Image (cartoon, rainbow, N blue to C red; front, side, top):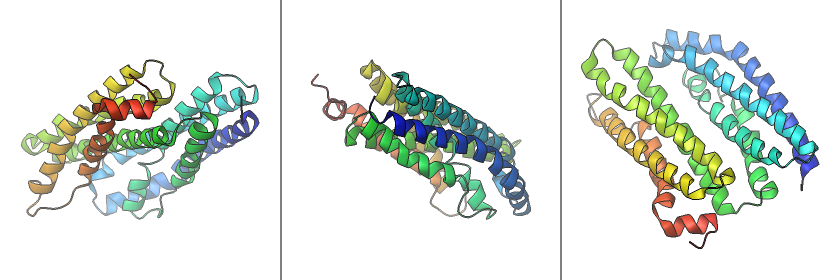
Length: 269
């Protein structure tokens, strides 16, 4: 296996840092973030106490998988690359969102979880391009699908936050109650697709899953975004809810078009 020693070293470092920093950043920043959000009466003060530690737990899992991949790379096992791909996707997912409440509350600017996110983003390209010998097109598509994975879950978190802040007014909470589970299901599907692009043997099933994620994301994301922009407040305003369905639509074009899909996957079908 090419680059096995280098990738083994990198994997071990990412694994150690991922686990250690996931613990450390919670101890250092969870209380200041929650205190700042409570003092500012920000809506996410209700959900951040749950989601920030939950993401830290996922980040620890990503670090553990990096350690497993490191052992595999050093021993030149074929499964090491597959475990590394799963590890990097999980770690990127786990270390993006916590930066938002950290920066929004001004408790930590820039977000400290970027210390884990950016090294993993760099290694993502090394892993799939140098080690996996994937094309730039597939690497970029995988990154786009990963963004859809993250953004749709963020929409689910934000919908949960707004729902909890509006209950028991179920009229105002209903749009968030309806779209929250759909956004999260779309997110998990895109998470599978992000891994499946590189590891799944049945690529057509990955395409079908991508189509399902696309239609779920736009069916929940656009109504959620339009309601937030045009009906939630007194005046029209931009909403970050729009990012999830827009990114999902952009990457979804590669699943809709057989020509684009075959070109990215290197298929002649």
